[in-house]
Length: 480
Image (cartoon, rainbow, N blue to C red; front, top):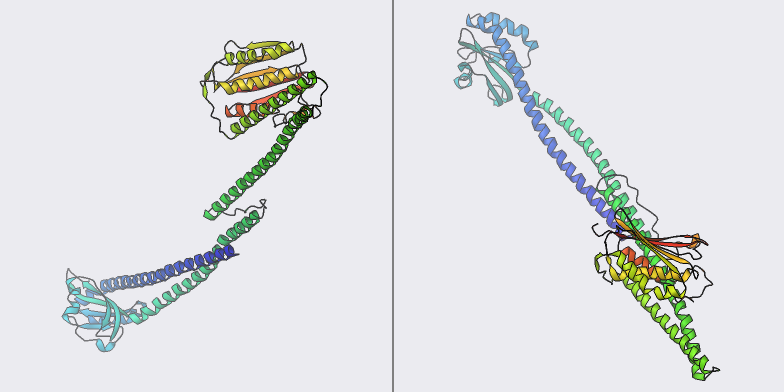
């Protein structure tokens, strides 16, 4: 709940900040637009007045030059309804001849300063208070030229109050637009706030469910922005967490099974040892021969326990990476022959035939000598144990692409299809009723698999009931 309130608080703060930014932006924009409209309108009005003054000047230049003021007066009175502003016609002496408004100004002589620039042939523009009107006005003065001489001027003007009403209308328009923009901004910021907080709330809810062991829910990704990327990362994290927990649960289950299997494997020899030691202590035997046999059984079980413990230590250290592989370039032919040589007493005891087929072009491999020899001895020993007396075992090696494959074939009973994948597990028995009369610990194939994995190779078995099994493993060629 605290996290949920925190998300709402963050969302609210973001909404307020976003709204303030928009409002400030709109305020600055409104002022800027008002100023631009004002300048544009004044400039546009001045341009219209100048154009109008130039047209009037072109029409009046001759009559004004010739002193025909009646014609000037008649023209101005007849045309004033078409003018944009009010008009004065001034002669070359600065005397106001005709006006469309303020008839009392007719005959008034303007100050020299007011007409000096226009009689120099310049167009004059002015905004501000005028002595003649008693109010702020906008006016322009256009010279009337004839025969390369300024013979008068046209003054076009309009009170700023009239222009200001138009500008006020424009300002109201900007204000209304700003109000609409503010309303839309509030709606947009609220929508964005919800769209921002909704996936965060969803993540918070899912994370709480994860804390209670539910890893099935995911966040629906609705966008590709930062929030969408966060949701995608959250889903990826949830997937990895679910996989990790599943893996930990599986390892925990394997550990329980391992402890149970080890306990079972240790119980049998220890019980046997306990029974025979108790018999020896109590003198429960019929002859010295029986006594010697008890000692041999105890010794055999102790050796089996030692092998079991050593294999467990080897397997655990290999799995945890605590045994460093001494990798070097090796001649696999020599290792195979040496492994077979070490097992020759067992082979002869069962009168087995062993066939060795090693490719002439067999390349060197990159491997740990002792560990690969351990793999070969384990696999060949299994073949010896399960091959009937007088039958044969084949050891074959060949190269394919960048790998060297070693195959150990036996002619034993074979492995049922449903047991193929389980034989690599610790203490797994294909025949559940079979005792370990062959002296194995049930860890050999597990050790083989881990060693080959650490060599970046593969190991598998191909088997058919009644026809035997073929164990195959691969190693990388040395130059690869």
